[in-house]
Every structure is written in C-alpha cells, then in structure tokens.
Length: 84
Length: 159
Image (tube, rainbow over all chains, first blue to last red; front, top):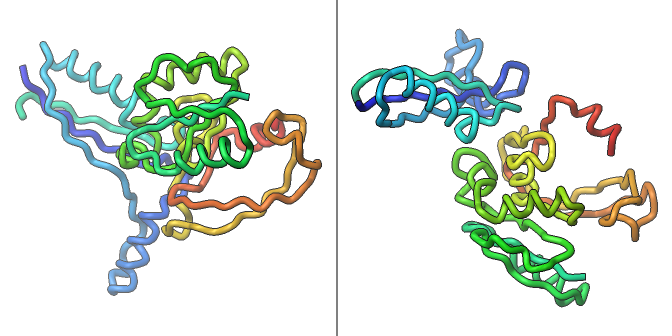
C-alpha cells in the first residue's frame, strides 16, 4: 500500500523563531497590523510504501526522531493517509 | 602528532585546516573521505567548516550519518581528540557527541568577522598552550551561529 506522509517541523515554543519574527515585521510594514504571531518551519511530503496505516505511522515517527527533526530545538507533527 | 582532516561533500575549509596543520604546525596530516571506515592511527581528527550536504534539512544533519562518523564516535569514546570547526562543530552536535543545537543568527545574516573569546579552561589538550583568561581573537563565518542547549547553564559550569 502507498501512504502519503505530511511532516510539519517547527521550532519548540520558547525558542526565538527569528524567521517568523522577520516575516511578521514585514507584514506589519505592509499594513497587516492584525498579525500577532508568525511561526516558520519546514514542510515535507513523503510517499512511502507500508503494509498498513499503523506501520506507516510508526515508520514516519521513527524517521522524525532519527533524522527529520532535531528534538532539542524542534517539534514535529505528522499526518499520514492512504494514497499519494 | 598525526592529524586527519575529514572531508564531507560540501566541506570547503578542509584545505585551510590541512595547510595549518601540515605547513604551519608542521604535523603529519592526512585527508579522510567521509566514507572512510578506518581512521588510520591518527591522534586527532578535525572536522572542517563548510556546507556538508548543502546544509539540507539542518546544518550537519545528514553528514552525521556518514560512515566516518561512526568511527569518530568510537575514537572519541576511546579518548581520541576531535575538533569540530564551524560546520564540523554543527556535525558533532547533530551526532550527539556534543550537547546542544544551532539556530539561525538573530539578525538573519551570515556573520563573517573576528570574535573575541575569553579562555575559561587551559587544562585541555586544545588550550594548554594558552594562559587562563587569555583573550583569543578567532575568525567566525556562519549563518547558524546561535548555540542553544536546554541545559546551557549547567553545560557552561561543567566546562
């Protein structure tokens, strides 16, 4: 079976997200003063083969721990669904 | 002493390190490609600066899985000397040989200048030729230079 994994990687709360802050500043200077917070991060989309959804989720979680995110500074969230 | 300079795809300060060790310090120095599984009886390995694997994902994140890093870890565990400069330091962090992680510079810029550091411990193999509290002028050049560690205070005390 083929599964699609969407990974969202962001900085942990409490770590200054300088990219997000800079983007927020740019939005303010364009007049979008309603913007209170911008979180920057990485988005990865993976196509993986697995026997079932449970395995696909487990494998994705392992990939996150081992390589895709650095647990010292980053949080990550996966969305796994069937198909591509 | 016998030194090695590790080369990863994207290392670009490897020749500088080789020159300093071999020509200035007059030490026997070899290059080791990142796929190397034998450290060839060296006393110290230097991981040079650069942009290993294009800094993709995070600085040093992919280089840490190079075959040579398994050997570097064993080497360090057995008391071997390991020096990571710039991207080399970032690789050591990602590999878990040092604690912490690097974040983007606060000013969003690549910083290239001299930095002044005060030496806090001259009882290490890397600093024992210096006086304690000596001010060292060191060149820096990095985009991800904001060191972060959750136990930063504890880490500093233990240095």
